[in-house]
Amino acid sequence: MTDSTIALASAQVIAARAKPAAIKAFFDDATNTVSYVVHDPATKRAAIIDSVLDYDPAAGRTSFASADKIIAFVKEHDLAIDWLLETHAHADHLSAAPHLQEKLGGQIAIGEHIVTVQNSFGKLFNARSDFERDGSDFDHLWKDGDRFQIGEIEVTVLHVPGHTPADNAYVIGDAVFVGDTMFMPDYGTARADFPGGDARQLFQSLRRILELPPETRLFMCHDYLPEGRDNYIWETTVADERAHNVHAHDGVTEDEFVAMREARDIALSMPRLIMPSIQVNMRAGHMPAPEDNGIRYLKIPVNAV
Image (cartoon, rainbow, N blue to C red; front, top):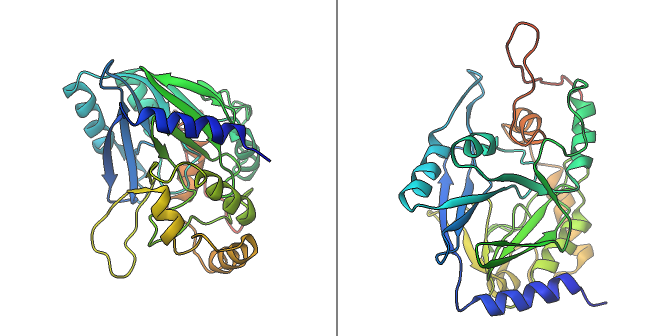
């Protein structure tokens, strides 16, 4: 069956090669996260993707050094921010979207299936009644196949569940920001064992992205150092992933992938910042409301997961 959204996105990628988006990456060493500023050189309209709020879990303190590097870049290049895009509710870092919105403007947006994550984790954290669980913490919720523009650059939204139920990839001009579907070819793919995650869906989602034209640029949300590599990189292509991804290259069957992914995931420890990250990111980067003493708290469920 033809995937009409991928067909439209493929046509977009081919048409955009003559006037590609400008892309600036910001790598956060503490969480191995890559944030991006993507802009249209003709209009200077821009989007920020997967920002990072610095967080010291031992002290319970946040800071803005990582986000402020993005702010400085945006101001230096006189860019206008339209969107603060999240690929999903991250489990390994806190989003700086509210801070960036305050300083630069723009709408905070994520996929519509964030409501599934909000319901699941809202129960786990026993979130109070002021947490709506309907996606309303975000300014906009995307559906699969939604299209919009950053200046004159076309964007197509892909719903790519598996890592979480709410993962999106953004096809911006001729580039795709893949979130946590896949990593660089020598590192493989993301885990699929979080609540609502599914290894079979993850395989289907990443192979869906890999149906785009071979020259399509792919930008990772994270990079880690596999054995034999000592430099961080986060850009590859559809062709390279199809030929060399150590978990999901051409020829790997869905059943083989599921067996591999589930066996690996059961041995993985939880991300260091999963508890604070999810509580903040399911609220679009906002902290929980202050309690009656004026202090905001992040909860740690004990022996619950």
